[in-house]
Amino acid sequence: MILTDSDLQAVWLTVRLAGIVTFILLMLGTPIAWWLARTKAWWKGPVGAVVALPLVLPPSVLGFYLLLAMGPNGPVGFITQTMGIGLLPFSFWGLVIASVFYSLPFMVQPLQNAFEAIGDRPLEAAATLRASPLDAFFTVAVPLSLPGFLSASILTFAHTVGEFGVVLMIGGNIPGITRVASVQIYDHVEALEYAQAHRLAAVMLVFSFLVLLSLYAWRPNPKKG
Amino acid sequence: MLGDPIPKKADWMDDITARFKVNWPGFALDADITIPGRGVTALFGHSGSGKTTLLRRIAGLERAPQGFLSVNGEVWQDDQCWMPTHKRPLGYVFQEASLFSHLTVMGNLRYGLKRISDDQQISLTQAIELLGIGHLLNRKPDRLSGGERQRVGIARALAVSPRILLMDEPLAALDLKRKQEILPYLEQLHDELNIPVLYVSHSPDEVARLADHLVVLDGGRVLANGPLTDTLARLDLPIRLGEDAGVVLDAKIGIIEDDWHLARVDFSGGSLWTRDRCLAVGRKVRVRVLARDVSLAQEHPGHSSIQNVLRGRIDAIANDEHPGLALVRVRVGDSTLVARLTKRAAAELNVALGQDLWVQVKSVALME
Image (cartoon, rainbow over all chains, first blue to last red; front, side, top):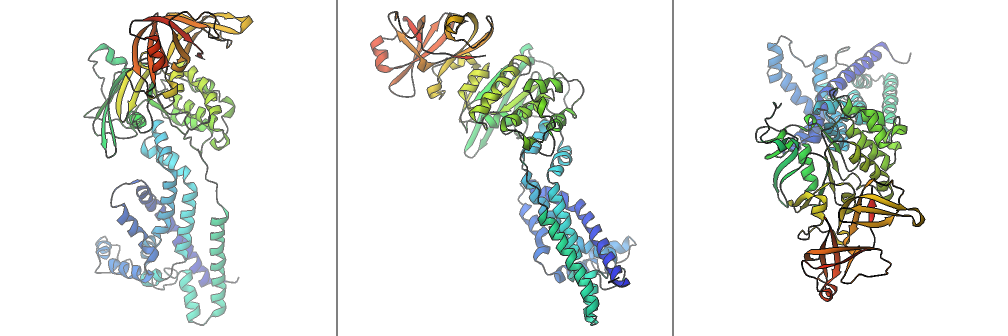
């Protein structure tokens, strides 16, 4: 085995985190993307900009604000404490919430593009065939934007795997709880364990390449109806 | 969403009434029409005339804040209520077939069928047969030709047993050959189904072939609304048909002369000879006579290559679009023909209202 137990633990934690975040963002990002793709409201622009913020913001800035919000004196921290959950920073679920914000644009933007590419016509056709808007969404819009769902999910998963700055700010470095693969590599390097850092880094490199390969090699033809 | 509306008068039950007013910058629509609740009504006009907007309002695809719409006694929109498209019992055919590309032809046909209650008048098999698409059912839309796609689109709209069929220029996106492929199906639809059809078109040829009733729109306003034959024969309308100005006569095949491959079509007021198209004697046909193919003479022309000569009386004279041309309407029995002549010819003939003269018809187009 090329990876140590603690490496494997970090990898497994990373996969779990990315999986959960991708799932949550599918539920959360889809309605946001749908709304952004179809609305004509003036605040489409501001909402779109907020969604895109994590693309340009240094992860430390995002992590800092989330830390404040979820901390003992922050609004989120107040709510979680009154609910008896305690504080979220330096916990797995705190990491999940932070990652949801951090990876939001990677889910919303490909989905929004996919929804916009469908256009109004198939939905109008569905309406003339007695399908309610919700019905048409699930039976026409979702099947037609399946490639969009796939690439959005892959990007979200991969981007969550690659996060580092937000994890350090929110999660710290607790083995089995918040020590993900990228932090583990950082630890190895800090401890001058270059051989171990190499192995884990190589695993990450191969993983990232395979993810991108699957995205670029598999390009379904847009079909005309 | 609606109770049983109480009919205010008997004929309300089989009419379609639409009142819509739109005032956008650069485009206004002000339509208030009542049209028959049966047969094919053409909404005719050039692009920008508001015909498609009117059709989309009727379908509920565009929401009009104020307006009124009732279809054969059922109110779909008034000041209080607005029925969303998916609750309206209509069928809609788009200019491009707009099939669902993720479903097969059969999947497309069944999409609407699954969502309606069982009391259907038109069965799926009937729609498939009518449009001749039985051999395409397992194909995906991207494996169909443009004409086939549009036939599937029409069958899909019919499969939901609509109480009205709305068609938005269903042939406009197709080339001439594909149009010729679909027109017979549309004619058959007209003959075999008892659903009112609203047919948006800017093609005089399609209108003449398919419509029973004609609504002419221009700049968002309704210029004319009446039976096809009467409306086409009106000279006061600036129906910008140009070279296509002419009338349509309802007729039937009278005699066939096998030796000459000619058929005589009888209309109320006379008969005309035309090329035999292998139609049975007694069969109802529609004949289109273009104004440019009709000429007038004071004396009987005697032997002439033009063999269709009728006796008629002038009942209207009007200017044509070109300043050198005039349109003259002639009554032949109960029917009406329109002739286009130069103003010089009109002056030399001394055309005047009530004048009797000979009408020569050079060619007629037979439409089944």
